[in-house]
Length: 318
Image (tube, rainbow, N blue to C red):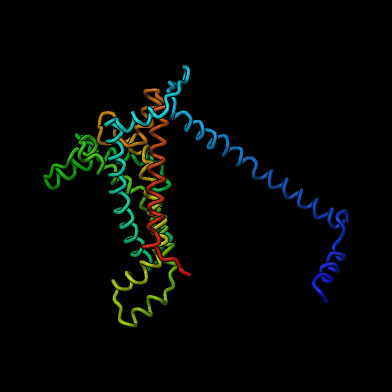
């Protein structure tokens, strides 16, 4: 039987376009599309209204000068030049990068060590809850508690306790420009530690136990097992946590705003606070949008660099 004959027979077996089966199929697909629109419509409308439209407006506003009430005037790239030439903005960029340099590696290493310690103990669920509590606690409440601990004078619980017990005078954590970012980094690490611990615990439990047992039978010690088995198999989880931690450090604002006054203590000023001050205190919405766009570009560049380097450090199972 030739191919043309077979195709003609197949075509003759197909129901005609206006057959009841075809009409039923088209009706079912039409109903499925309407159900999809019904369920996805509210989410898409909210995404368009509260995310995409404001984002587009901010992109256009970055090239304008506007105080929120008067007329808008087109200034081109002047807002970007002003921000890049402003020492305050450059200092905010440096503080933001410093916060990431401190919090990301220290937080991830601590979380990995704690996760490895908890991986083989009983009652892991209880430990997960305990370590995860700061993550679900209000960031404002966390900042207020740490403000009481790190404050100077009679209210500083940490400084007063260390001075009374050991006679050591600690720095003025929240007012000294040289130490304020260290204090903010400590609070950030503490509040986000539980999330990374839970993520690393899940990654460790996904590693087959027999791989480590075989390596130990062959004479490999704990260090070699960790270096050649645990770390490569956990590298996708570490990479995910690393990317998320970097982006979160770039967006730090609420705890800093409650802990210290970045206006009075310039050492605590980050890019997000620069955006907030320009927009909601000085009412320079064009400059504020330009600073926010620069932060977005910086985040995109750093994230793309991380994804570009993942082939050298991240091991994905085939």
